Image 1 (cartoon, rainbow, N blue to C red):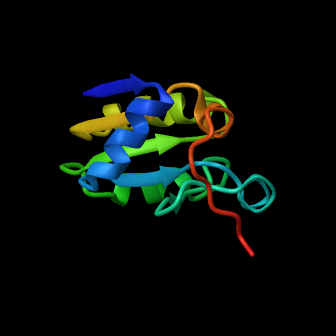
Image 2: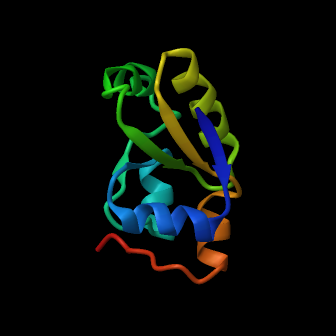
Image 3: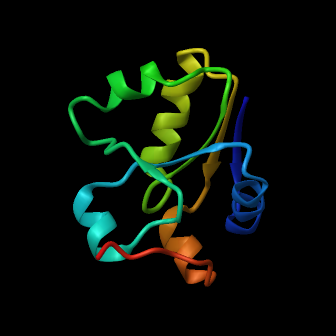
Length: 108
C-alpha cells in the first residue's frame, strides 16, 4: 500500500517510531539543507540506489522523502512493484517539511 501524506501526518508517523525513515536526496542536499532526524540516506540518483532499495525488508513500513516529492513518488512506485507492503511518501517533500517549521538536523 502506498500513501501520500502531508508533513503533519508524516511527523506523527515518525513519532510513533514503528517505521524506517529514508531520505532519498544527495549528500550535497543533506549537507546544505539538513535532514529529518533518524533518516537513513539512500541517494536515489546514486547508481546503487535501486539495488539498495530492493535489499530492504519488504514487510516493514517505510517513510520516504526527497526535496519536493518527485524522487520519492518514483521510489514509492518502485517499492510497490517490488512487493513492499507499506510505503508512506511525504507528498511535498523536505522543502514543505522545513517550511512548516518541523525540526531538522544539520550535518556538522
